[in-house]
Image (cartoon, rainbow, N blue to C red; front, side):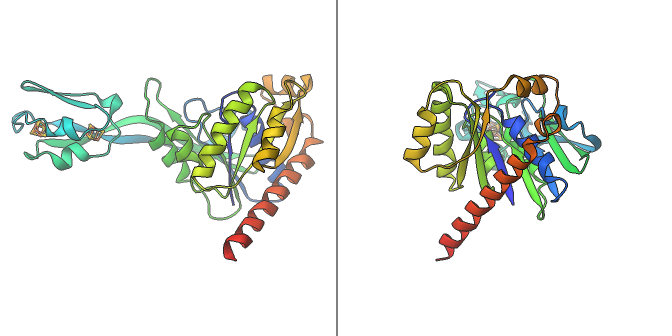
Length: 288
Ligand code: SF4
Ligand code: SF4
């Protein structure tokens, strides 16, 4: 079972939910936490894993042999990302814009373009007190998160429960991290910003045909519009976490919620139980 933890915006409590869920399950399940928030991974601050391996992430970028080039401009025409340009008798490449799709080298009529690897990030893996762990780190200044996310997801295990901490937002890195999940938990807060970004995140997961439910964090601030929205859209609120100075204090010290306040463990086990029921119901309805 793969459960992704997403949110339309950063700072809603995704890390708190991902790490608490993993630590609550570890005594009864094989559990793996993959931190795909590669621009700002921070699950490791809470889990403190012993890192046992690492691997750089490379994408293939074009290298032009100008002695073969006729400056026909075909490579610039086919590049959807403006990562290669032909100006007079010069070919300029912009490796940081390149998505490594290979179209330019494939379509160059003179076979003047070869590909060379360019490091854009790093994946590390290890273990923390019964939780298998991996995370990706996008190199500072790089913009291409999806290849790093794909590399982290190579660690998805086919048994046990896999929890994926998804980057915030609704763009390509989110789609890359969420796709293939059995269920997506959307973490939000009861504020107008929370509601706006939740609605965008719901659109994204519905587009991907992934069932979802909400974790309402910092309940007690804001208003009831998130709850009204969830009711109208028939999205279950599966867990409510109150605005609580003790929870905030633990978070600021890098202490997982279920370690600092163990009474929360049963709430996260209950959350998993509700998610399983929803996945089973959906699977049954798809078979009919
Ligand atoms: S497609 Fe090939 S030959 Fe044409 S400008 Fe680009 S590198 Fe040069
Ligand atoms: S590999 Fe793809 S993205 Fe990169 S320069 Fe070539 S066409 Fe553009």
